Length: 419
Image (cartoon, rainbow, N blue to C red):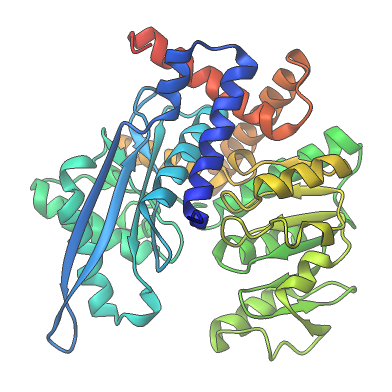
């Protein structure tokens, strides 16, 4: 029986964690503890649709571990979401939090749904119903949700409101990625892309001795993170020459006007009316020669079928699990510098942590303070990864990143007496 892509994704996440344990020579008990989720909750959510009929949706919330602190991780609304995907993303979130030095374990949630088929009223009912179903498992000191694929600050606000009704108290730190008016943090909306830019600039300088001004960039995926990255990399002096969404793409060797493209995408839902460059396919973006390639769509988008087309010097993996194991090995053999997802996409959870801290204090930082802290966190994480890579003679950046995470997680478990 063929395994689903989500089952393969989960296997890959566990494989990476276990390999890091072997690199560190951790004992079998510790290896098992860092590999298994602490809790997986499956729920059914009845929603009265606008036509009066009741429709049942299935959802999940997974806590991988809370040894370092409460769980942390987004909630995605997607028709392909499954328990295996949620478990995989929870593992990766643990590793991401540990690599960047924030006191969280990994959590993740999801609902199997196509949100594009729901009205705003139905979407709100589904969001509130999900929180009612998982309320006993989440909270500011338990497991803290956030936005993910196809969830928004508005959805977070509905979820926060529902949770506070259930708890009969204000608890804005229960969830992050909220609108500013509901206790969100300045800079959270672009934090994944901003963190990616900081660490890519830093790595480009540290490894290659180059600045990114004038470097050519291709971006596979033009959702919130991809569109924000296009704008930020352009403002930093790089030249974004190819981007795509799930259906179409744009190529312009002179550089794409990313602000205009984002406006067109918002108005029309596509890229077809962009007036410059030429129309290409998403596969063409993968095949476009560039200095920096940013996979910013869904997991496993770079795989054995298309990896040979990639022509780049450095990949900064903005989407979780964007590269399959096979693609990873091919690119390593080619000598491509690989900044793994648990580093390159960590800006979002870092600023989510800052939002949680601000909610707990009731005191909110300026944009400049958030950016200063985010930049330092990304630099420190890269330096930790580089240090263990050299110390343990690890031959690639992904294994080095997971080794940092596994070492920190194992220490937090051991001092608690868990292993």
